[in-house]
Length: 232
Image 1 (cartoon, rainbow, N blue to C red):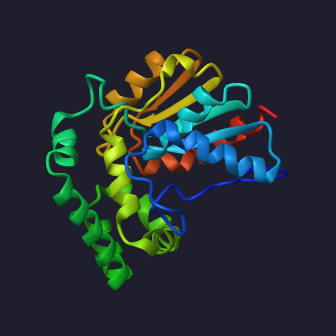
Image 2: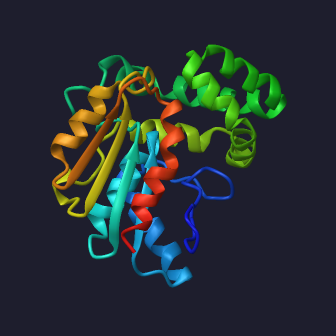
């Protein structure tokens, strides 16, 4: 973050030391953040959400409209009820929740048992651009997942379920300025998701970046953060 700013992040339910919260929605993240910021005595703030963090980030602006200055979202999926949300993704998540939960638990076990081997396997499966970005951030991924999987895969499973469930708020209620960034070559979250969101957010400036993928788009993080900081 730029000098003079503090980045506050909290574990979503089921990650780290945060209690699981089965059945949670994207909108529920606003309540958790409001409680944390009350403890920190923070009144006004800006928000950053990447990939699966897009819905939770936008929920803050929708549910805490007097407190959120600006929002940046990058590489994010649209809600499950949008016409661009892939039916096969929804079916993979909701078609057999018990299998999905076990898959998430196995994912966590595989990482915990041998983090480097697990990260090697992930890196090998990524497209070249995403692999380069992944390797640049590899130590952060290892540290983050080591903390996130303290309780196993429950947080991962709950994130999956909320991704394929209605968000619980209306994008029309996001009244602050939003910058949306999406790589045109994103193979993980197709750019159609970003365009769908941009068309429905009242004050959105969309940056669809040619040649960038889901991971490589992160090279533009300094520009995104500078815009957030300029709202102070």
